Length: 162
Image (cartoon, rainbow, N blue to C red):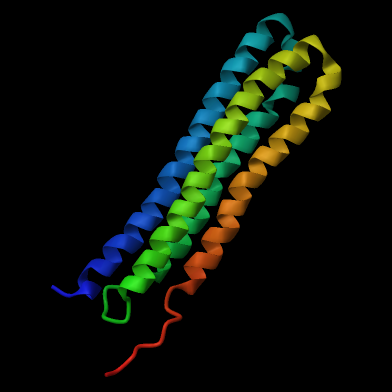
């Protein structure tokens, strides 16, 4: 068993971690924001559709993870050309995107929950809530960008012959 035999394992773990962690963030953000919307909707049902914004933003996080997982999985090959360097690059790519998506989902969930409740009491807070949500979403976008860059590094090292 050579190092190249284990390299695809790391690539596939990177693809899985991108999707799993991003979807965990999306699920948490959706659930936490949904609780706030349901609570606020009891007293102000006319604001429910306006308050869906955090749920939509949380759902986008899963798409970021899906994009990186597809990019990584198309790059993983079982042949000798796929080296440990490539596997580690794909692992780092998946972890960067996935963990950034998880962190962004947590931020979106907390801000979304508190924001929709506060918006029901004071409508002037809506723009501020949206701005905070945009900055929370940007965290996941940074992870997506770094994930794409890291994934593109796989396969770039030339084979050295002794």
